[in-house]
Image (cartoon, rainbow, N blue to C red; front, side, top):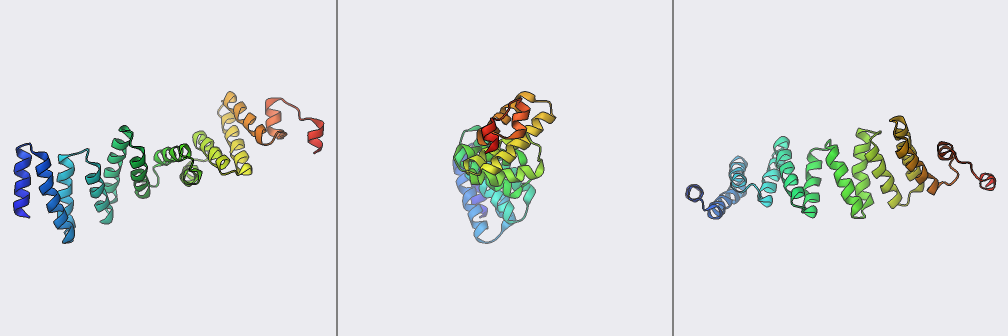
Length: 214
């Protein structure tokens, strides 16, 4: 171990980063096998410092922090990895790492909303709904969350819940003075319930007598 560490340091000083990383990886693997977590963490930290954009190494470091219940450190490494993956358009990897980050930081509402949006884009409304429920619990008047919730329920073919969420969204828009946005939401409601009295009243329309009789 001592020889490998010295070699790694020498290679680093010479600017031969791939060789330095090779020896650091050998040392980290040894410490991990021996259960020497503190030493393994220190070695992985050196690896990350050598190559900050090495996603696999940073994730190993984050997971080891997680295993040792060092949540703040794990969150920091997962967050840095998410930012890199987002910036580089690696969406599949981003989703996997973001899920790990949310697991450690469930109050990260912005990330939950971002994941929900991605899941809807991928036609996966159930996973989107799971994330949106976290967002809704944090703020029941967030128009972006309500709009995404309506989309999720629509994709799941739950008409009643879709209309209920749309009505709440219209109420929020009306309360905040966004009448134009409220009108668009009420129009959507009428696509599901053509004679909805609240939407008809808001839009200044009158239901057909025959339809009302039905």
